[in-house]
Length: 400
Ligand SMILES: [Zn+2]
Image 1 (cartoon, rainbow, N blue to C red):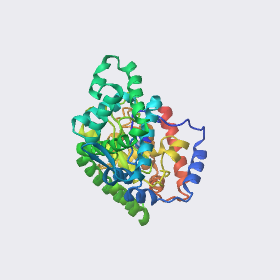
Image 2: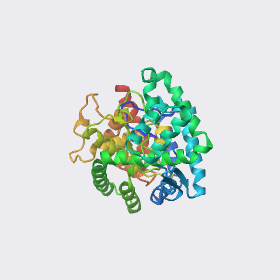
Image 3: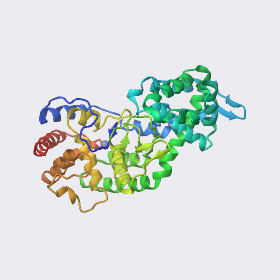
Image 4: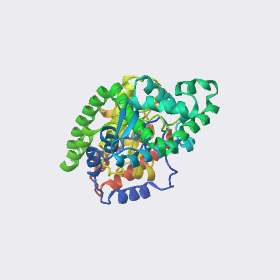
């Protein structure tokens, strides 16, 4: 996962102590392996990639459940296609997993799940209403009553919420209901992001597209990589954002891109049903950053010039590049504020960005080699360029 945040290297695995030249060597050899760079886009377009919520559904599976597999009737649920039951069971198990492993997810996952469900009930979602009745049958209280019950003692009450949810999600009798509800919830969450930010997403895509075209011609990126990248920018859309997934605490708003998904998201502060609104400027910057990630070369599991390679072995080289591209997108005069030698950086990954900026100024050919590699064209020139980047990075970090 890629998080835009103000803390360098946050949530990354421990780094090996490598010299700049060792890092460059390793990254170059890793990136030189042959990869299928079309697969992530093919999976996305065919509906076989994950929509990115706790259900674990791909778009195709979600569609099958909602449109052919299960029908909501006046009496409840009618399973029309038995073959979707397996997917419902898996999704129910995924929800159970959250409740059994709350420490791996958002704080108070029980509360957040119920709170979101309650707002879906109030919005008239059919499966949410049935689920509400089910809670009443199983626990003796509907969700609204459960939520108001122990509000004052939330931290302690969450275990109770988790157990109630687990009781339902782990009962095979309820698998179709939970599976169908998670599918409807997933669509609603996706619509929420679209409803709030689709205009900004469309604009950000155009800006990234224009900047990419300009840089690609400037730096001689071969045409096949240009074409593939343009398509990746074009297909990028919102995920089925799930508030249950953990995001870095203390940071009110972050964006996220998950490898190989071509689905970006804006994470919210606040709580479900009471999302904190964010400024248009923040939204735009976050979307530009995440769209650049989606544009980068990656295979179906996301190995490109990204976390798995540059950030695992080096130090935020890829985030530095992506945020640098973000900062220069839509700014034809280049990096006005970045030229400032003060340390008051207002963007994420400041050391990586500053190093990338220095490389661009001091050795534009090497910057060009990193740019080309990032969009899939790996050449021998990548190695010295990476090495130079890491030397600059170490210098700037020491000065900080
Ligand atoms: Zn990022």
